[in-house]
Length: 111
Image 1: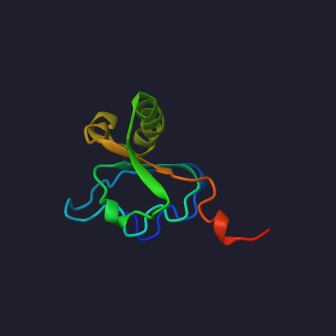
Image 2: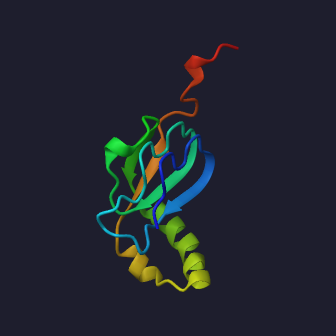
Image 3: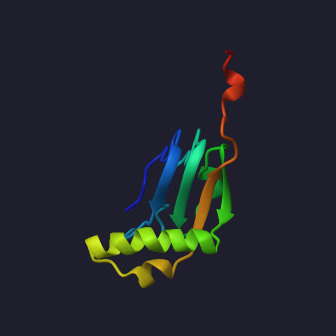
């Protein structure tokens, strides 16, 4: 599946993993404005993401060993429950979306 526009909007914490399983390879894994307003947490995307679809509040990073360990932990349970093969899922690379600020709209408010 895929996610629509504004996935992860105003995300303040937690982990979101988009796998794009059983999708047409010509279909983007997420719609436009991915991570708009994000100020906490992490979004992992399996496969490529077009940077023009991202909200301006996120940056794209490669996953590191720590990320891979975390992904395998969560995805092994997912695979056990839903009958997917972890090794097959992990064959495709992941990217990591992180917020560029903990207060992306802080300058818009007066208090």
